[in-house]
Length: 170
View 1 (cartoon, one colour):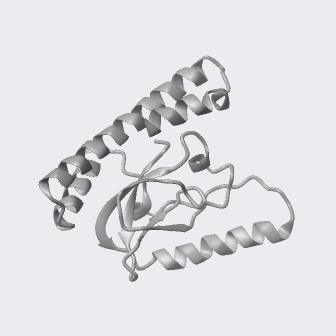
View 2 (tube, helix red, strand yellow; view 1 turned 90 degrees about the vertical axis):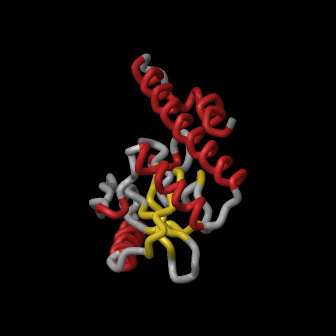
View 3 (cartoon, helix red, strand yellow; view 1 turned 135 degrees about the vertical axis):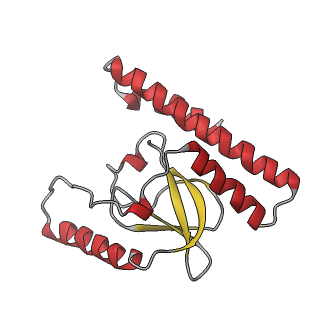
């Protein structure tokens, strides 16, 4: 699913980090669920295509122990590629199980509900959080449906960039 619903893990500083399945590195964000633009260094990353970004889903769990080691490996790989001066096709590293996008709506919605209760949101705030999540999920699903139709017609999706981005941001 592009954009993805990525599981966000709590860092020692209280922020959240997600695993980027494309560049093989961690991306840090503030500790709030929702839509984000990735700081990914690869312009050809699917997260820089339409609509740009991903949705953070709070796991409430600490960053897995292996995450920083895998992140350093990803950064080293990127640096070697840049220093080589050669443009090579990039194959993303395997995604660890804990970093895989969440594609099951009930699991994703459960994480959002749990987060809203644990963060002490009022009833109104919890209702807003749930409606915002449902709207985002539906927008992402609508985006994917629209993109498939555009591709089936052999039309360049970039032609519809404003329209498709508006679907997500309405």
